Length: 222
Image 1 (cartoon, rainbow, N blue to C red):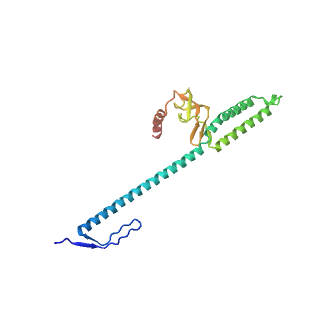
Image 2: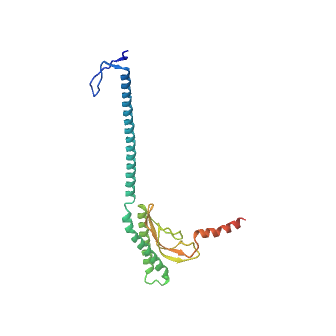
Image 3: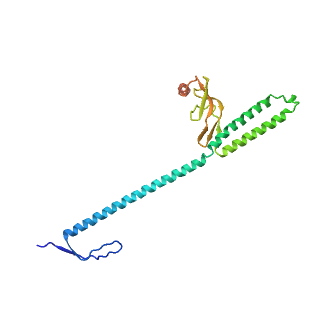
C-alpha cells in the first residue's frame, strides 16, 4: 500500500520577509510534523512575548521607583537646604535671649523713684528693641521650618537632648530634664540642635512610680 498523500496548495511569495510554499505533496506524518513545528514556534514566540512583557513591566516599575526617589530627594534637598545657614544663626538667637534676660533683670533692680539719670526710659527702650529683634528672628526662622523647643520636665531623650550634668532630686522620676541650659531647635522633623540639659538622678524610675501608684488606685477603687 502506498502512504496516503495530502496535497497542500500554499501560495508562496517572498515579500516583506515572508516565505511561502507552492503545491507541495505532503504525507500525513509530514503534515502532522509541520503542524507540530508551527505550534512549537508559536509557543516559543508566545513565551518570548510574555518574557518581553515581564521585562517591560519590571522596567516600568523600576522607572517609577527612581522617579519617586528622585522627587523625594529633591523635596528633602529643598526642605533642608537652609540647615547649615540656620544652624549658624542659633548662637545669635541665644545671645539675643541672654541680652533680653539681662536687661529685664537690670530693669527690675532700678528704683524708678531715684532715677535721676534717666536710665529707666533708656533701659525700657533697649529692652523693647532687643525683644522685637528676638521675635523677628524667631519669625524668620519659623518661616523656614526652624522652631525652638524647651524640654523642661520632659523625660530625657538622647536624640533630642544633650545631658551636661546631673541633678540629685528624689521628687522627680530619674532621667527627667530638670534644667535647660540651652533650648533645642528643630528643622521640620529633624533635630537641628539638641537642647543642653541637666537631668535628675536619685529619684524613682518611671516603672517604679507606676507600680507605686497602682496599689493606691486599687485601694481608691475599693
